[in-house]
Each structure stands twice: as structure tokens, then as C-alpha cells.
Image 1: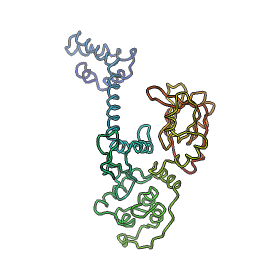
Image 2: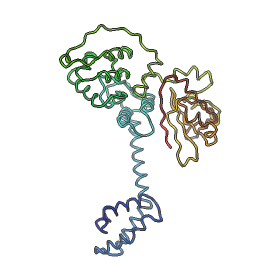
Image 3: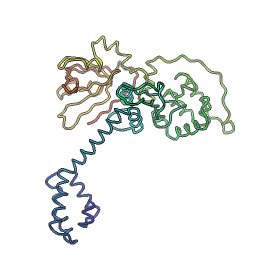
Image 4: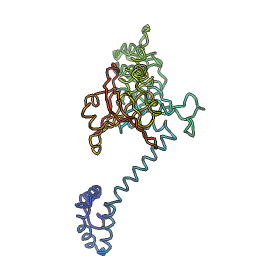
Length: 388
């Protein structure tokens, strides 16, 4: 673009049109229509006609091959660097992806689940330790190391950005106040960080006040009791006798985790349903991996992704997640059309079909029958990422 602007007198708009033509990767109606403009522009400025033709041929060649090659090269580098960091520094990789959300195919829940399966310690949102972004902390066992890693991995502390509805301004005030002195209580937190009852309730729902107020129900009670004081009493601490509440059941805690942060560090929801799924004869992701190619099998998981590429001729690719990993499901057009409701509306999907595995290790389930069993999730709120 710069050569054409300097040597052939292209305007900025003409240079941009040339860039678009090169990016279109077309042999007809693309770069060739700029031939006369480039050659005439260069010869008018004293360049030899043969030299001008040579410059155009180089531009034309780059448009036919060099432009897509440069994109492929750049993508290959990004893929290689990402794979290297994920392999050797998985904690850093996880923190970076969480801090870049929203992005890509994978939700924070999927990223955290995968990292934990690969040995990364992930710590909950906590007003005593969390910043706005996810951060790295010293692990509980400094001598422990992952088998495939060269060095001990730090722990990842989830950031306050994971708390649904909490604004960054409130989080920044919280962190600034904590740097002055550790928080002694929820009341101390509310006064020094200038948090209102709504902010405190959001933190309580995310279980982020545990270190100051106990379990989640206790946190919610304390947060609800915080009222904005009159200006004269704003700095005065509140004294109130504590009320002991029973702790919530595990299933309720998991439901609240997903509602407040979009993920859970407790057991995966399907771990609670596994006895019921096992009675149906439905395998988890790890059990499927041991099946021979061509075996019939059923699987069940939370729908985390649906993809329908334009080039797939009506095929939909579905990713199911359970407590042991992910299952890739291929749904041909005929199955999609016959069982559309279960495929597109379910959050918890059971799939019966044929297990396929290649010698290279690629594995997926070819769907024959789909069952929507979302009602088994109860009040658990999950949402898939769907791409067309």
C-alpha cells in the first residue's frame, strides 16, 4: 500500500481499495483492475516501465498467494504460542484467558474445569484476596508439580470481575481500601470501600464474603443487614448480635455458584447426577475414551457449545461437558431435522449413537437419538455458546 502511494501516487482511499482487492483472494476482478493505475502512475513519476510492471507482478502475486499465506503463518504462530503456554504455564494461560473474557468459544466455566483437570489450583473469589482480574498466588504445596510441567505452577485466584453485576469502580474501591489495611468484618468492608447493600449482596451471592462472615447463607444475612448510614454516622461501626443460620446443601451451593459467577469450584453438577445417569447406562467422557471404534454408547452432559458452520451442509457439532471432561457430538442433518427440539432447546442432553475414534486419537459420538433431560438440572442455570 505504501509503495503504491509513494511510487504511483495512490490516494489513501485507492490504497485501501487495493488492500481490499488483495484480501478478497480473487483472480478475476481483483488486483488486475489496478494494473494500469499502478504502471501509469509509476511511469509518470519517472520509473522505468519494466520496473513498474515488475512491481505490479509482485503485488499481484502477493494478492494471489502471499496474503492468505501471511494470514496462515500468523495464525500458525498464534496457535503454537498458545499451545506452548497452555502446556508449560497452564496457570498463566488460564488467568490470561479469564481476564480477556468475553472471547472465543470457551466460557470461564469450561476454562476453569479444563485447567483443574490438568492440575491447576483455582481459588474462589474472595474480598480479602481478589483483585478485579484473576491473579497468580503461591500454591498450597510449593513442591508439588504437574507431571508434564517443568516447574511448580502458581494457583489462580479468580477476580472480582467474575461476580455478576459488580462494577469495576466498586471493585477498585475495595482493592484500594484493602491495601490500606485488611478488612475486619463486612461492616468494615462496606464503610471503607463505600459499598452499598446491593454490592454486598452480589458479593455474598458469589460466596466472596466467606472469610468475613462464614458460609453463604450467613453472608447473605449479614449483607442484607447493611444499611446506608446518615452522613453523621457513616464512619461509625455497627454492632449487632450474630445469628447462626444452617449451611446450604451442596446442590443449592452449586446452583448459586453458577448464578453468581458462571462457574463452580465445587463438584461438577453431573457428579451429583452420576448415580442417576449410571442407572440409565449412560457413560461419562472418561469412560467413552476406552470404547472401541464403532461401539454403541449413550452419553449425557451439559450443552456448552453448538456449532453449525456454513460448510458443514446442515451438520451441527455439539460439545457436552460432564465431571470428567468433554464429549464431541456430531449430529447429521437427518437427525437434526427429526429431533430438532431436543437438539436446540436442551441444556442437559443425552445422546445415543456410535462411538468413533481414529488412530490419531480423534474421538466423537455420532448421534442417532437425542433426549432433552434439562429438568434434571432443577434450578441450575447454564447457557451454551451457539455459533452459526
